[in-house]
Image (cartoon, rainbow, N blue to C red; front, top):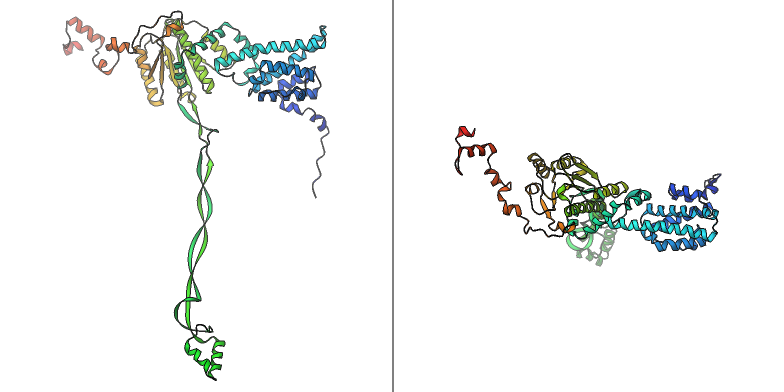
Length: 526
């Protein structure tokens, strides 16, 4: 006997009318509950339909909208199509919710327009015009964000358009746009930065991988085993004589009994008793028996590789006074390209802006409202001050101790007019040996320097940096090995180190009037 169906809850039918609330974000259904247009149930269903449609990048026919009413729905659909909002919202849930909240806000103002004396058609047109003007500006800002960063900001920051739009109207953002256009003239800069950060495998599977591998599974297999079976009386080999009742194989002597009138009865008695002398024949038949035994059987199964991800980036940018002009623009472009690459590849990016002693600013740059504000503030400032490379290098080395930054690479963007202490160079070399750290450098200047060559594993030389600033003069340098060519003794090579003496020893030799190859007595050297 089947169990009786459960009784419906007391208010289940009434609550079902508001089932669309479960699929709406809280800030969206709060506005949907209090809007002045249409009925509550139709409005909630219409909001859900609009969010899902924008997320899919399309709009349903206005006649299929539960809300707003058909004439208003047709005008609203035309406005949204002209702005291209479905394309902007494709795959962007937060932006889709923001658009629908804006629709609620502007349509709710129709009642206010009518209270001010406007008729229904005029009030509707005013609301749609305000909605179009609002999103025309926002779509322009979205285009700028996509142009600069390659995609929209992360997370729920799309809901903070009041903050983002204020930042995009600032003069600092115009400097960001100028630096972004500068990157188009420096393609090698983007290639270098995209290679920063060492690859590592994560625990997450790579779903796009279609590789299959055989996996051994336990199974029962049947093994054929041949077996010879002895079959008596089967025509085959004659082995001897035996007693039997087989007439066809009896001996001739037994057959002779049948011709005697009395012995014939003896023959019949022997046949009944199966005592006739007969030839013994037999043969063997081969049989195959199936035996089951456990075995390991390979079973092909999908085995996606573990997802590879690039390591984070540590960027040290020289903001000293010698970087003013075109070098400053290239340094800012380096920071912007690092942020773009980190955002596109979901990597962390930490920037050290350094000047003179105790002039060090650290920034964790990301593509959100706070990260955009920090980026605008950094790219909008003017570089000045001295140069102290030791501070940012020490902070970068300390950051490598954390597991999050252990796979990071270090990038130096400078004109190379600095020198690190022997202790800092030793610590950096130790990090290269033990952690596999790679140090890349972008030389924005006229010549290589000893300080830069000691630190960097590889140098990208931007020779025409002047044309990115106020001056278009070409660099007079015709070779990237200026220091090695004109000042070979200034390089800290092993040979130069062996031939270098201490300052006190050199002063004593000068006072003694010694020439090259002559040495001080031992007591004077000590």
